[in-house]
Length: 395
Length: 102
Image (cartoon, rainbow over all chains, first blue to last red; front, side, top):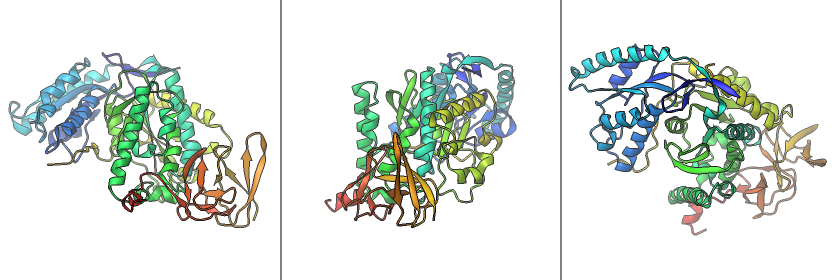
């Protein structure tokens, strides 16, 4: 099968065609307010006061978003509080992004007439880049160019019995076509890690999965708390999930049955195609940013809905440059937030459709959105801020 | 009272997930692959998405869903009873048990 996408110089294919302005701050935000077709993001963390590992994680996010197949051209400015660190220097970010063959320009207030001057020059550059990007046409490409990422949240038991199994067939379909899929959320693999390790492509990958889970479980135990006071979340408990193991065993269904090719860090790009496990935190303000930076060109959020009472609107989440689909198998959630839902698989619970059939239907829906149909969340200007998931503390 | 439906995810499971609101006294039908459905009489209210015990589960015994352990019974659970945090103990990442030496 195929979709209509934007071919990039490095061989990847975009489902969107943005100009990205980074890092965050008034320069980037001002340019994006002025110029349509641009993207930036707001995060509380810019790498300042962070360890080298965490700064490198921030750099991976920025470089990864720049290299995203959904980005046509990039503006990087030097006026970030973290920008003095070697990992986060604007020139370094720009060079690594430019290696993908796309146009990258650097703004430096010290040379461009101060902050106002940098905003003015950046606005002019962004207008030109957006114009140039608009001249690129979508072309029909093979579905092996899909790079999807899946997450589940607000999970209830409909997630485990219908929503995630439908996702699983969808992911299998992506991988069978030669595409790439990411899943992660290490805490929510606790209790299901042996099942995943058996699916590892190599013994090294199996070991990496088990190590990632045991690291995360040790951190959880070090709190001295019953994990159930943290995770499953109150929304999960209200939805009928009774333990972390139960949540995990339901959650891994979203990753299908394909061999796991590798374990990646947050925002790390994979070396090949197929299914990858990302060792990362589950937060929806964090994980989608990481997935987009890893190169995902569509991201999907499977929700249950136990704790979503009254939420008739589901907003954008910080996937920045990747369209985000909200999906559910919970008939109550669908009835409540139907205008925000891109895909519904409660049909599986009612016995009207098998998980396989729902997965196939989702695959077609994703190809359609990859081709340019808007995800419901894309019809809103608002998206939540990003949380870059740094782990080593601030000093 | 009426016939309600609940689903099992694996033949080894000793709990099923209600896909309708179940009330005490309801007959609950649990489809099984290649066999006639199992019928369990509910003794508790089991909300949509919550679990019902398919057999008596003594305290300490493993509770299975998806064919895998999801915890142990914190106290005896009777067939037809609601299974949730009041009677199911998670066993993973329990920092509280770690600290008390458990």
